[in-house]
Amino acid sequence: QLQLVESGGGLVQPGGSLRLSCAASGITVDYYVISWFRQAPGKEREGVACISKNDGPTYYTTSVMGRFTISRDNAKNTVYLQMNNRKVEDTAVYYCAGEGGSYCPGPKYEYRNWGQGTQVTGSS
Image (cartoon, rainbow, N blue to C red):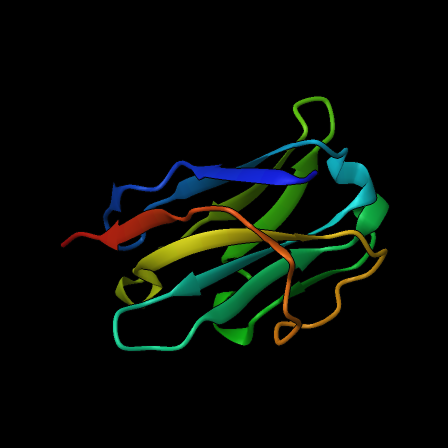
């Protein structure tokens, strides 16, 4: 069965960078669709980025496009979210989710497998 563990969250200055990791077990991430979501206090869960099977098409929500990059390291069985040019509104708990399909299904898809989340906090 698929298990996902997020790490890499922490405190970062506006304009700074942070890399989140989503380590997978039970599957090979190259054959899985992996997405990053986030949820800020008082807000609904938001889809941030998605990477398709076998490094297929990637997708980003408009607010992070050009600043965040989702990538996959098959040797480490890990998916990353590189967060550059951080903004205070990026503060949230970030989660990764996995799907056994081939292509990103869209941010409203109800993923079956979720990690526990990692907190990303902006600092002035």
